Length: 379
Image 1 (cartoon, rainbow, N blue to C red):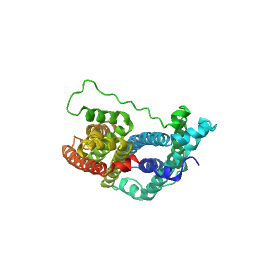
Image 2: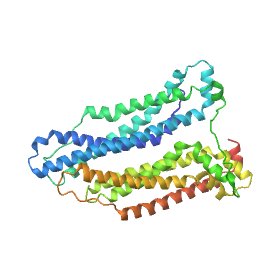
Image 3: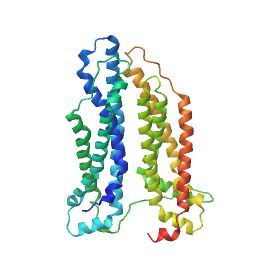
Image 4: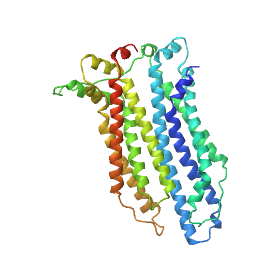
């Protein structure tokens, strides 16, 4: 088999993201299907108002949260396929030299979809277990008749089967176009990374500045992951703290849990990839006498502004989302509390994020200093 079990195990991040997406979508979509079946049994005006509100909220959350997580999975899958092809160029080049066609080689990448299947199954199963509690929370005011979760085969197909097939085909298609490069290019594991040195840059250490810029430009997808991790942390933590009067504590806990998992997982993934892809650069910098601070600053320092931009975008996103839900989606509902920007939540989230991010950067900086030149050059 072209792709081994160890390679599939590295797709843990995809499984986690899809698990979160499947969990959220299964809960709200299953609930909306079940509550629609008892709509005629709701006789009180308050019950109908709550019914319309919960159905609208379920559609918004499943659509936005599910859509964002699926889009993130697309980026993750492309990242892993590209990384595999870049690191196994010689093997792929040999197969093509032996007469294997591009599509024959690319079709082996269907196994990348297994990570999606595993994550979707776990997320669907976890949602099924939590669903009775979720139904009780949604009906904590007793406005609806008692309702038990029902199994919907079509929903299972939509949550598990369709995403699995879609991402299998996506992996094959992207791999097909990616390995269409010449055989010699694959055999040499050629990497088309262009480093543009600024001629107008003046200073004591222009090399460090140029290295910081080229590190960002050569790994644009990792820039996205760093920004996305800050976005998740900012949006989910502030959203959970701002929903005291709009949702239950259980819902707020679910939101912040998913946000923290995605934030730290993508951040650790991106920074690990940054350090790993720049090991030879770090080795040469140490040979020429650059300090640990200069090495870590040039390799990791460029991602700090990216994370702060991601945090700002996440802050704006959560405010606009909640504002739209209150002022647009629930505009016709009575007794909906007015929503204003929560500056206290912003302060708590910002201080926590800066502390956590700087601690993680420090740990990776120590990791850079712990790498010996000999071990790097022997790789």
